Amino acid sequence: MAPTFSLLLLLPILTLLHRPPLAAANLRTTSALFRSESIPNPASQPAADTPPTTFFEVTKPITVPNTKPCSYTVLEHEFAYTYGKPPVLADYKPPSSCLSQKFAKIVLEWTATCKGRQFDRIFGVWLGGVEILRSCTAEPRATGIIWTVKKDVTRYHSLLMTNQTLAVYLGNLIDSTYTGVYHVNVVFHFYPAEKLNHRRSDEFGEIGADLILPISRTLPLNDGLWFEIQNSTDVQSKEFDIPPNTHRAVLEVYVSFHENDEFWFGNYPNEYLSANNLTGSPGNGPFREVIVGLDNYIVGSIWPFTVIYTGGVNPLMWRPITGIGSFDLPSYDFEITPFLGELLDGKTHKLSFSVRNALNVWYLDANLHLWLDKKSARTEGELLEHKESPISLTLFSNFTGFDGLFLTNATRSIISTGRVKSSLGAITTKSVQEFGYSNRMAMGNDANLQILNQVIKSNCSVVMKKASSTVLYLESQKEFTLYLHSDIIDKGNKSYESVANVTLGFDEKRRVSSGVGTFTSKLENLQSAEGNVFVKGSLVVSGLGSTRQEYRYTSDNSCYFRNVSSSNYTIIHDEESCDCRKKLGLLPSFPRGDF
Image (cartoon, rainbow, N blue to C red; front, side, top):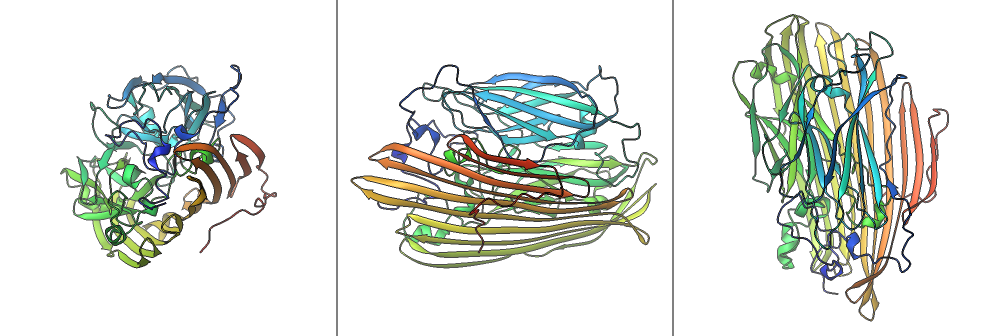
């Protein structure tokens, strides 16, 4: 078979029947090994009363108080042909009928059902322009599916206590082929505190900000409120100003990647594409960096986790266990308190977003969390130091024809220090961001074989000091690992088998020290999936997918462990424990994809 596309990105288009138009990024029918639409229905039709399949992302259950929540539904909607139309809006009002208005935990619950045939769709939920959830839909089956996403949104407490407009954008398409309508309920659960003093008294711990500014596009529009980054030179920005009594600022950024960059981690170097005349394959190599600018400064960098959506690589892998982060995409925080000296001048300032090496399309927006000095009308600040190390990027290519080896390595650091004077005293804040990246990609079998190993590491810390004492210390060490093996095996007689194996890892160590004590936690989340599809002529004859996952979370006061595996929509092993004395072992032959 003549190789014309990356195996990571495409099977022959003949296996895809009736693809919808791909004129816009929201219709996330991006390149993948194959899509569910190419899988034939079983010969024997299921009974009409077959219950829907429950899809889920493995994560730690949210810890809530032992109090009865005050819950209410904000939105009920059927997302049918919503592509290119305005977001669905609903009036949001904080709960007034709750016996207590002192809430220790607030949980957003998204529940959706769907049946028929449909691609996965990216969607977002905004409150007053502030994004509170970025997610991907599950791909349905004829008998129907259901899935629920629960997210702790307590950090948006101040926003949730005021009247707002809730906006949901889910660009879906309905026609004679794609019949799946997403039936959605959005519910908020407000958990009263068990004690009256539930709000910790210190001003720097992980307490919700007093004010949250949306750094997103403004309604009305016929799309999501996110900015769209189309290429490596595209810069999107928004102006803002802050209250004069701000004493702390944190920027939270939401990121997702689609179309030609959905599988950016497997994109070829441009020299390889040119040498082999592969004009239809995504390029710019496998390294991406989201750059966050504040006026003339680079204040943050994101080397994103490689979320694989529910239709990516091989959709059968993610049924019913979905990929890490696919139902609740991670957001990324930056401490920009050191720059308050630049922002507290009473003028308008600008936040900007770009993506190094980007192809179309990336969705980016942000929320600016601000803490205000309640005892002072004005604070003062000064930027003491800011160092942006130039990115160190090394590339190595060695190929002959379609086969070869490609190595990409990168490092970067950003250090910022500033001082803020408020009623709390003179606080010096130092923010450090350090990143490391390595990608090894090998091509063989005339490009029918692709193997890649990728590791992204970050070490970010924030230290706030008052005179000789530390009032806040935050540290987050993350490691994102990815292993992917894909191959097409010629079976003769115009038939072939496509096989793929994926291992994803999301590890994080956190430490928070403040006036109320020290908290440490550790997350190890490892997932392995494999799938194959047999094609004869231009028709898919059969397919198989399976997934195994181990989730380990430990902290000073709680633990959660889960081992779960599935095959062809069926859970075949599931073990979980909250006992810190019991640590579940790795499943047999669990690949980690190490270098």
